[in-house]
Length: 298
Image 1: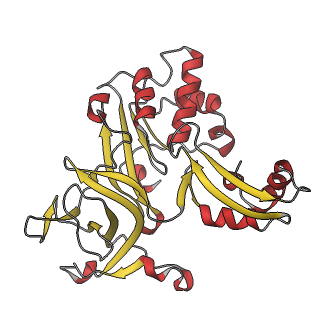
Image 2: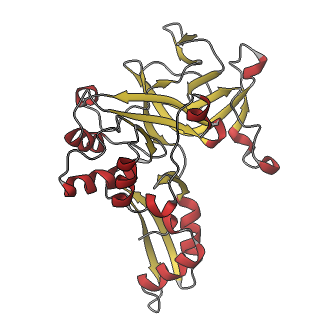
Image 3: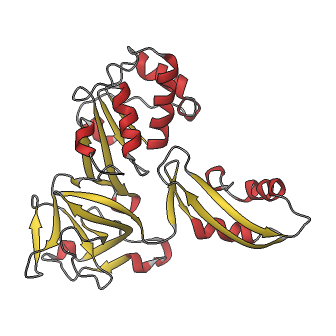
């Protein structure tokens, strides 16, 4: 909210009932001639499907800048976007970040599909202004790229050493925008002492739990190091869902997986071994009373 307001830009906040209905949302965005929109990829997909059905190319013509965040943005979805919106005239952005680092810290702007040739997912890009990325030079010493500022992004190996360009490493962030930690010091291993710090300001590292690699000067997201996934923009721990399924009376064993993460048919799937007295509908009904709707597996 503060970003546009301190820049003198008007902001439209719509009720959840509208965001849940792509047709209503499209009409609202069109009526107010909205020029920029921040949304999760799953909502973008719903909007594009609705636009395709309407066959009205004048809808959302003012909305030139689309910002995706909160889920994996696939190249197939980007392709759908540019099938409807002309390349070089409209922009699709992919932002990366989390609550612990006060929002988005990297970005990638797409103006056409040529940028995504031979890629399966859209890059999470480069650090936002006032950031530094550390890699290793040929002598295995950290080298910096980008502008000096208030945020550092690191790609580290399991021993917390910077990885070489092109290698996959875990993504760490340091800077003034870091949270102090979790309530009651929960998950304290997420916030570590920064042995690479060149200034006391950057004495703390946040472990994102995400893998990434640097290719052609942009960061590529390479998945989670743990069992967390994003479902409809919400962070879901598969082990937590699995524990809930296993706790249902009559369930002997359960395994929960995320099917096709980031794709249109993305879904949480539960494989269950249960007694003959329990069927899948009964298990699902019980889970709906225990879990938030987006956490209930199929």
